[in-house]
Amino acid sequence: MGKIIFITGGVRSGKSSYAVELAKKMKKEVIFLATGGAKDEEMKERIKSHIKKRPSSWKTIEEEKNIIPIFSQIKSPHKVIIIDCLTLLISNLLLEHYSEKFIINYIEEIIKIILKSPHTVIIVSNEVGWGVVPESALGRKFRDILGKSNQIMTKYAQRVYLMISGIAIKLKGEQKDAEIK
Image (tube, rainbow, N blue to C red; front, side, top):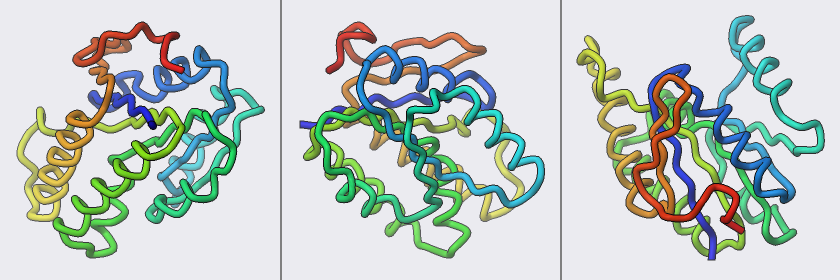
């Protein structure tokens, strides 16, 4: 049975770095599933910076929207998969005009696939509900869908962390970080 570790928090709070450190401690083969695309120079630099922080032995798969088929392509058991990040995945789907119902169902399908797999999956997401109410309808829709998706993830995750200023606060789960197999 697969395991989900969910890491949420504000922008630049250390979520991705913490996910990388957790994966390193598990001493298993790691697949990094990146959902952000390099659409401009600033994003290209961010991606380069993230890649430098990861071991070169890790496999990186870049997929902005259609991540479900990737799980069927991962044949070897007991890997660690980092999905970084749920926020960009939902944004990408929303910008392609997928409905809220579709996106929520998609998130639930991802969870089902993970839980049926032999893998430990670390999912990174932003907490966007603490800021100001977005001015646009699209911004409010994004915030609402991400908030619902984060709630669904935390319901099924074995461990949940909230990152604040580089500090991980465990919200759910009893096992020590190095104990998840």
